[in-house]
Amino acid sequence: MHGFASRTHCRWHGAHTSRQDRANFSGLKFSAFIRAPLGRCARAGHSERRSLKRSSSMTRWIDNPEINPTWAVVHAHENARRLEAGVSPSIQADEKVMPETIAATAGTPIEQLQILHQRIAPIYKAIGPFTACRRACSSCCYYKVDVYPLEAELIAQSLDLPLPSLPASHQPGHGRRCPFLTKKATCGIYAVRPMVCRQHVMLTETNYWCLAARAHQVKLPLMRLTGIDEAFVEIVKRDGRSQPSQIRDLRDYFPTSPVTSSAGESLSP
Ligand code: SF4
Image (cartoon, rainbow, N blue to C red):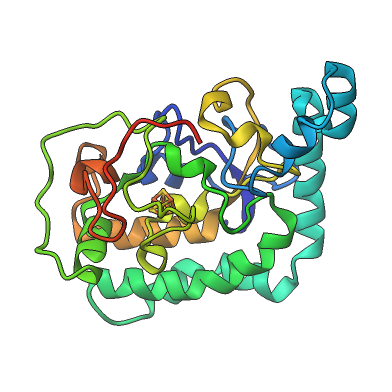
């Protein structure tokens, strides 16, 4: 059973980041879930700016109720219900049949991955207004960015780099800036960015809890699109390099970026 559902994927703790893990979660009702920690990029600094207008903690809570973690959780769950009701049935149907859609396409796994990227774009666009994720918010670009070898190859291919072999290193990703994050806080490899970046959708109103320094403090729901998850898992399985031991952080493959010329320095967003 596919569709809009809860998601336990966690980029901060890394314990649930394998697609095999996620594939084992099937069709939880979207409106009835408890999720893993925090979310993805959001309205760039929006909540921060509002919260800094006044000095007392009480007025800060009034300005930005999401500083209260309980309120943030409630809002995220309410928003999940709004999303489920507000996204068109045709979009939800497209998402649900994504495994079959991708299975019916010809081509190599890397070609199928590119098709998946194209097919899911309108789905995430439809979901966007219900999420806190906005252009130029880069909070989640300071978390782990787990990728499979296939994804690393697609990125290398897009940059005209030699196909990378599996790195021996395991970089700690959390709190470190992604090397592909540009100075304008946009993604330097947006068209080929990993699935974990696409799938990380925050349901809170603002990005207050998205900052890396706060990411472990509150457990908030994330959205999970089970049809897309499963389609991706099938592509990776077909590629044959689908074991958790073959997952690396993006920084293991690309310690520095030819796009941004930036190293994965340790920063707080
Ligand atoms: S690949 Fe792009 S979206 Fe993903 S963490 Fe890096 S800069 Fe952010």
